[in-house]
Image (cartoon, rainbow, N blue to C red):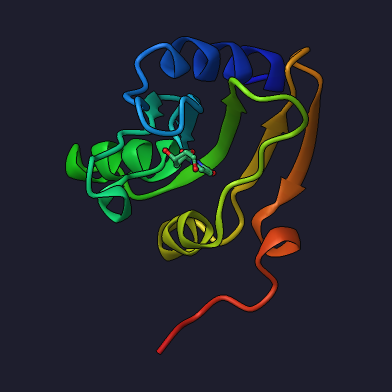
Length: 126
Ligand code: THU
């Protein structure tokens, strides 16, 4: 699966964001080890702290469906510049796939690729 296609899926997901408070729509597309794509978008709440990011939305949907291994996630947003997953989302991704490829994109769909450990070098574990 090439990065451009995964970003395209994330762009479609971004349109489903519910972000009336920040007006910052985020889309994610999570690729499983067997080639399935799970899209997600951020879902906000009037009690702001209850907001769920696009990335965690995608992971939780996939895990609920029985998926446990992920090979890549692409993220895009309505903002300008590259959008990086927050620390909480990186930790959630690490739970299942510490080697996952993280693809971040900007407003022109240019992208940069990382391994999760580049972005979260010290994963919390017990
Ligand atoms: N957000 C995401 O969905 N993913 C990120 O990686 C960073 C932030 C959302 C949360 C909130 O709805 C909005 O972006 C502004 O913070």
